[in-house]
Length: 413
Image 1 (cartoon, rainbow, N blue to C red):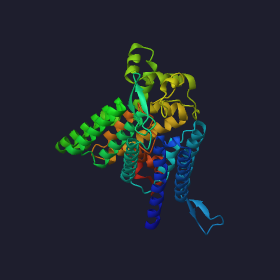
Image 2 (spheres, rainbow, N blue to C red):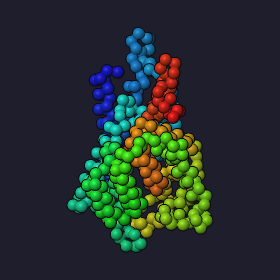
Image 3 (cartoon, rainbow, N blue to C red):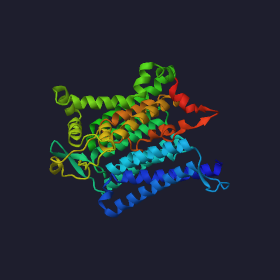
Image 4 (cartoon, rainbow, N blue to C red):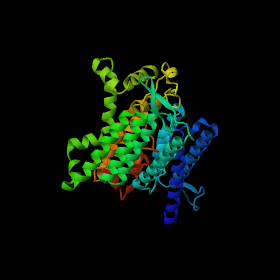
């Protein structure tokens, strides 16, 4: 592939990524209260999918004038693999109505010759820009700052978004991506600035878990940057137990989710449920009411987002915040297993390719996904692109009769 074609593909990819991510983030703001804005965002997302599919076809199909039928597949096995994943993901998306994982698969397959660091920087810029603009417009009164109750008192600001925890969630991911960009090295001024912003948003939104996780993350990254000069970071992750925890963190958190549901009726389960603001209660109710299906199920989720009259929604509220449980309920068993495999490969690749400890940032994202349903949202979690070699079928490529170096790297320490 010549340089001009690579450059063109990159431009199309990032244009598509922008058209998907920015409208998706804006759909969590009160701009959607105006119908034409919401319709515009939907059309832009469809256009983004079109860009992604064009890139996939361009990679897999070539033009051969010498043959009677000039169109042919570049690598049949790789194309069949990608088609199979797209088919399973597409069926699940049609049934459930949730296209977040389909977007992840489409854009990951389209990300040929795209560096993960480039994607992280782009996503960070989009999140932080939208966050600044929407909160600023909310402050000026251009967009409504919806108020929510805490213990029957209106104290929680949504700052132009559909719910108070939404803005704190975007701040969390922006901080994670910024720490990635700085290679886990924050200055004292950066730490103070982020922690001050975190405190201000906590006072306005009263989003406790996000506030605590950001505070711990920033302090931990700062200390990590101070002490990592005294030891080789890579040696820490050579320990077998540490490797197991980092590589299989997604699976372990899924097991924890299952255990939480099992022990919910006990006193310990009720204690955990109070700490997690009834998240376990709604997970258990979700599994009981909707069950687990092979390709998922369409569920009309009812949450507090976008409505300040929370009292009227309490009886019908059924929203599941835990990403692992929601993926299983929404998109089904097949997608859930596929996601776990992707998380394992994602963690393995990041741990092995980035020797400065950035895998810790991914672990924070996986932990945060225990209380927020954003694990598969590429507009905040670009680390999923690290599993591109698996999703794109790179491991099926052969060189001189041997599997690619990527396959060797995944299977050997």
